[in-house]
Length: 262
Picture (cartoon, one colour):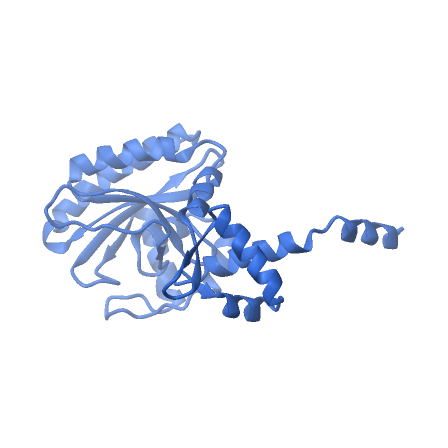
């Protein structure tokens, strides 16, 4: 009986589809892209198969090909699909208006992101109205140990899921303010839970302060984070407290619309 089941599973496999998905997963980790030769070597597939898969993905709009570097990169079509799968409820329809509302109050850039495989992923932003403000590129990876959104989400993840992220963290030191070990990081997450929001006090970039808070889905899962960023001279201590309260109003409103019971 077991042999029959194994044969049945094998008969329904589509090898080239599996290879195509492997190409997408590999390129998702390499924003600068890869050449045909690099891809076929890394994935251990023939050049003909690799070329056919890549050509098909380019034709369908899932990859971009650059003539100058002869490299294949993920297109924004993948990001669009990612948007659609974030929640059963279309979370972006709820989040976008709140980003703009909060931006209009604080005047700083307000962003939304979710957890990726290893780090937080930036998804969308409402650009600040000051002459100088911060702008991010969609899909940018954000460190968990030194960012406000990373801390905000990590603080509220179920313990088993948080542990899987902790096991992969490297705690790169960007400056003397960066948290560089798990003990201090766990203390920081406890502080986040007490406050309800997270801070990045120049922990990655000197002169940049961020305030982030989690967004919860109907099942109380931290499905993302909203945060605002600005130069430290525009975000003194009293402003941080004021903006944090405004931020929490926004994240609670979004969470409520997603079905979370406060």
